[in-house]
Image 1 (spheres, rainbow, N blue to C red):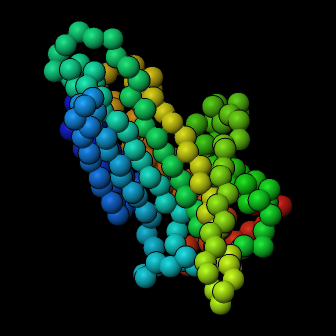
Image 2: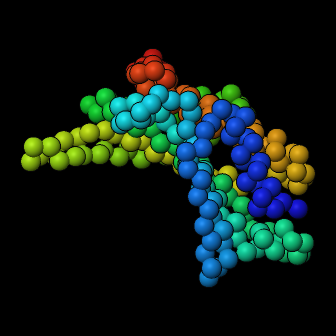
Length: 208
């Protein structure tokens, strides 16, 4: 049966194989419920130092390992609850603040869809466009607010148990690598769509 350490180790191997780099790894325990939460912040290759003008798209990967998951991993016969992995992608745009929200969202959605078409072509044919939140970040400048940059944020959730029917640990590692390769492709596509410097080149939504 799957253990917490199996999952974390498999994820780490997967993001290294996909050439993503861990910038933050946070684990926490909620004593009242015995839940164990994990969050990993993953970046592609990037230029240093990072600023709002050159920060590449990145991924926050989170999941909660519940008391039920722990008991099942110890051999208890319990009905399994979903084990959801949440994949949150963020693209920061420092020099494209004049673009409309519709333009930005469509460009983001097309980048995600292109990655899904490569790794999950059958599912991509029927998938709905991903939801994208547009955040406009303002800073005080000479007694007035000035738009500094725009962030596009989108999250998807995948139930690990739903995608892993045979419960074989080798199959799990293969699944995690496939999922992380998809994540890396999404990040690369977002960089191509939104990063005018260094990592990818900006294209309008008509040319994307």
